[in-house]
Length: 373
Image 1 (cartoon, rainbow, N blue to C red):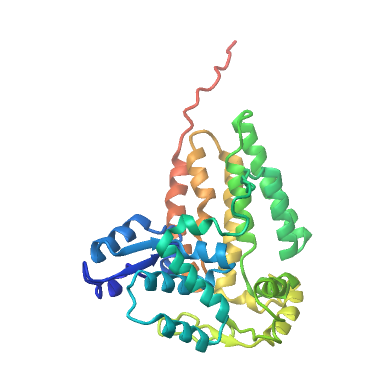
Image 2: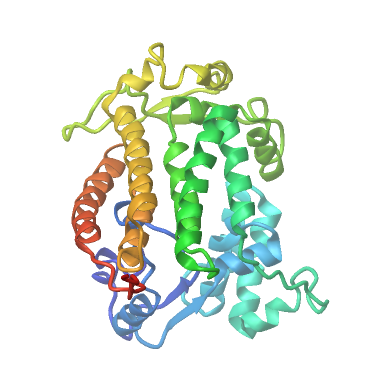
C-alpha cells in the first residue's frame, strides 16, 4: 500500500517523511495470482526513490507482537516512532489525549506509542532486549520433512472427518496403486511422485462445500480459538458476523459472480445442523451438489484418479518429469467461486498440453537383449 501509485503520487523527494512497516503482508494480488510473491526489494527501492533519506523501515508487526503481545499495536508504535523523529506537527499532550478519548485499550496503545518513540531513538535491536524471554536461550524448532506414511495417515484422518471411512479408503487405494507403480520404476530410490499424488488427491477430495464449511465452524475448536484471541465469550460479549455467498440464495453482481451477504451469529446453529447432513454429499438428496461448481469439483476428482490410473499403466523414465507436473496441477487450483473457476480453466489448458507430451514420450532406457535360439 505504501508503494502504491496513489500514495507515491502524494510524496515529494526530500520533503516527505515516512516510517514504513516492513512486515510482509499478503495483498489482494495473492487472491488473483496464487503464485504471486511479495516484491520486497522493489517496494523498498520505489519508496526510497520517491521519498529520499527520511524513509525508515521497521518491522512494526514483529515488534508489536514481541513487546505488546499483539500486532494490533503496530500502528500506534509507528505513530510514536514518527512523532519522536519530529515528523508530526502535533503536541505529545494532544496525541496522548486522542488515545485516551478513543477509549480502546488505552494503556496498551499508550505503551505502544512510547515503544515507538524508544525505537526511533535507540533502534530495533535495543527494543529486542526488552521482549519477553529475551536473553534466555531460545528453542530452535527445525521443520522436519513429513514422511510419506505420516502424510497418508494425516490425510486419511482428514478425509474421515470430511466424509467417512469408506471415502478415506478410496483415497488410500489410489495412493497405494501409484506407490506400487513408482516403486517398480524407482528401483529403491526415494519416491517422488507418490507424495505429490497423496497431497493433491487429498486436496481435491476435500473441496470446501457447504457441508465442510459448516463442519469447520461447528467444530468447538473454532470458538476455542476466538476465546484465546479475544476477551469474553463469543456471541455474548461480542457479536459474530459471517460473510457468505450461498449459491442457492446469494445474488450476483454485474459480472455474474455471487455476492457475499452478512449473516448473524444465529448461523452457528445452522452450521451445526448442516454439518450433520454431510452424509448427503454426492447423493440424490444433495441439493448443494447439483450446482455446476460442485459437479465440476467431483469431476476433477474422477479426472485425477483416471490420470493416476494412466500413470500406473504407462509410467516410465521418459514420462516421469511430465507425470510430476500433471500430478501437481491441482496445487494451482486455488480460491473459491469465480476465482477458483478461472484457475480450473488455466489448469485444464496445461493438463491438455502436458497429457499430449506424456503420451508422446518414448522410453529411451536400454532394454535387455532377447536371446534367440
